Image 1 (cartoon, rainbow, N blue to C red):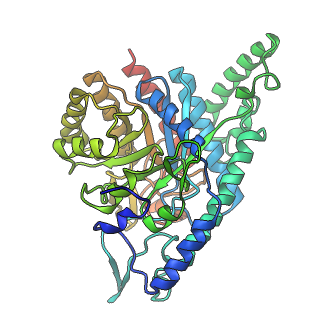
Image 2: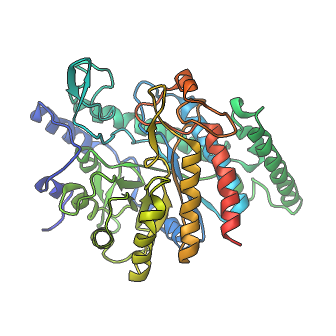
Image 3: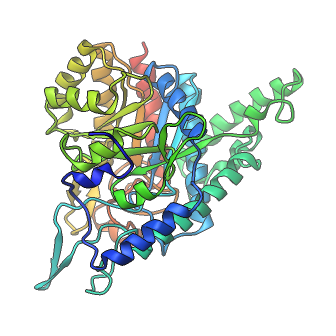
Length: 449
């Protein structure tokens, strides 16, 4: 079948809302189709080139951000905190690896979430599941849970404002390497990790002074003053994605202009269904989650469907097995892809396979399990002689209490209730994410020996 931005509608589809008013849905899609693109094709091509470098081991991929963005929690401080956290992690990883770090945020579009069930039941009341703010409301009321097409317009507007602020931060001086000390978030300044980061910042300050003495400074080298942070999200709601799909005037290719990179979740990667059909036609760099249910033949078929030209940087396989499962399932998949000569970018999502319910009743993730999956991922790649390109995290720059463990903040099951603010799944807070970065840098140094 010939691909078009809407050809996915001829295929079965999972994880979609049922809109009651189809005429209203159509009108909203038409309005959204008339809006300016959020990103441009040239930016997506640049990202693809950088992902190709990460796939060859010439750069490191850092992808992270919210589990699900929220209309109600939208504010400049949260965006700035995530940006500063990404800069800190970037600096730690770049200093330890000696490679450029490619920063991709789960931001400016991460509004839709897959659910394990179509319905939720509380005290005998059964309502449709919350599927993210782009679809319905989180409040457990019949009115809030009705899918609302207008939410797509609100998601677009919030994404546009977020992108505008990110570009301002990236180009307006906040990313200047002379300001590395200022990136430290207030609530981690006094803990051991904040002090360790300050020690690293001091080393960078000395290097900057040496370079300035040689005539190399922020005024003469934009690389020292500016950075780039790309955007990404799970392209779950295809009505929204189709409406923002544009044909590039320069190449004639089609791009999803809602984000620089999009990915397919582990629940929607069926080869005969709508998400694969949509993704095969857009030319953005794309990702696909790879869970323990993935079979070897299925993975090769999926790679060939999404990257038929075996293009470097086109396809990021995001491994999410769980700390107890990755050693059992991942090596055979990695070996098969390596032996078949497929060009892919391998990254590790240590979050989604490690969800558990705490004794206090909260859904959480344990830091030790997250770290264990990361360490195993890099060790397996070293054993196979392949490239572990990067990491994919659900995290926030805010001081939340959603994941247990870590030495930096030692959150217990009982302490989760203190600041448990997530819209959906538990996120690493800034202290935990920073601690993981330092431990990851130690892991990379060990695997490079």
